[in-house]
Image (cartoon, rainbow, N blue to C red; front, top):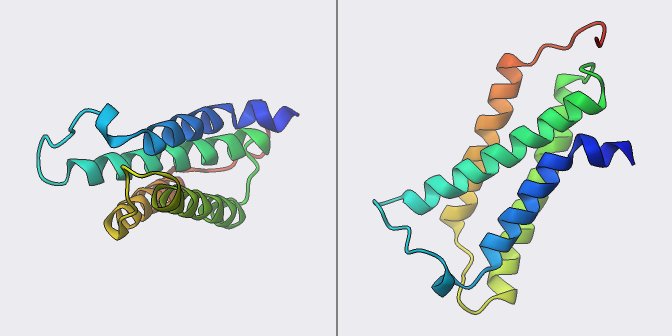
Length: 128
């Protein structure tokens, strides 16, 4: 039960992302502020989701998480979430469609978050 509290922000953000991604396109603002703004939103959304999952795992392990193991688990969970959202848009909505460029933008966001974690995370010997 404690893991739910540690990953609460990631869970909340994932639910919000699902609501927005499965909402009919007619109910959303156009969002075409410039060419590629939709892809930036996808990249930023998945960057934030991955960062929140990494943050949750650092808290869960009391900052003793092994980088490669943590990154691998979060990577596969994030990839699974990309697949669920894109397949959900393809099969369960009539106004939204799956797009390979969305998947690419999602992957870029995930990669950016994992690279940031690799650069900036340093486990501490003791949790204070």
